[in-house]
Image 1 (cartoon, protein in one colour):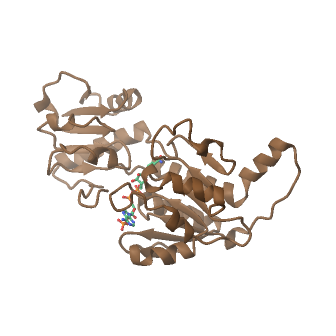
Image 2 (cartoon, protein in one colour; image 1 turned 30 degrees about the vertical axis):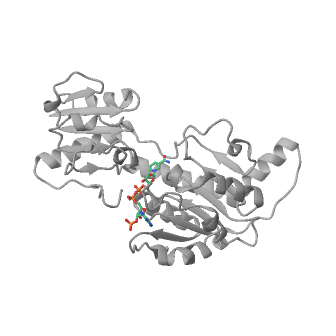
Length: 313
Ligand SMILES: NC(=O)c1ccc[n+]([C@@H]2O[C@H](COP(=O)([O-])OP(=O)(O)OC[C@H]3O[C@@H](n4cnc5c(N)ncnc54)[C@H](OP(=O)(O)O)[C@@H]3O)[C@@H](O)[C@H]2O)c1
């Protein structure tokens, strides 16, 4: 069995994890002069366009992350070869931690307290009780459902929005464009955990932000985007923060990454920026996941978490 790793930087930790889990497996790292017809499996993260199509005997392409937008950008991807996205418990846990951390941060007005601390000022803000805070999760997939569950356990009033109808205990579920406005009208803290697809790109714009609800005990709605940068229109988010249409934001993902030094987001007192690491893929967990899926495939069993190219996720 030959596996090729095609990454945008050398995947040293992942390579070591794969070699530790499967010492007999031949693992190659692009660029390599291996005979292309020897490769059966590819694990990729942001591969340059045109590399994957050279490996004509590939049976499965694995994304190193939960998102697959980085793969689907390549028009030369071989048709009919399944793409498997990452579903891994540590990745899911870390995303739930990020969502809970940033929801609490804005609900408890921490950006304002940090500013007061810098000024040496002792001043108390009014903060709503958790049971009165309405959080809405856009994307009720693996990560969105887990985050919604943690928020609910913490006492928040949680809703979720997805493309198809979903059900989750204690979560008000909305589906499709017809129900988006109703979801927004009851959402004070908006969490974006959607994939980047033609249908979701730019969905968080000035119009959408204008439809969010405001908790009577908070200065305005909050946006937390840990999905993809192209979900939000950055100029609209900045304008909404400046006008007060948004009270605060936590942004892990951006239209351009790294976020350019000139972006006003860096300096905004109510914005928390993280460098697209809300939930990094854990090398050992991904190695186990890929090897288990390969073992299933080689026993003739169906692969799990196969991407539907028609929907882009
Ligand atoms: N920042 C980070 O560190 C980081 C790390 C990992 C992942 N991510 C991002 O998180 C995203 C979500 O991951 P996941 O594992 O939860 O994905 P997933 O299981 O595929 O779930 C995607 C969710 O989005 C919904 N959705 C897709 N298109 C939609 C549309 N047009 N309208 C409404 N809902 C739509 C889906 O609806 P259905 O349920 O109806 O299919 C589903 O609920 C990934 O795609 C990736 O971009 C970010």
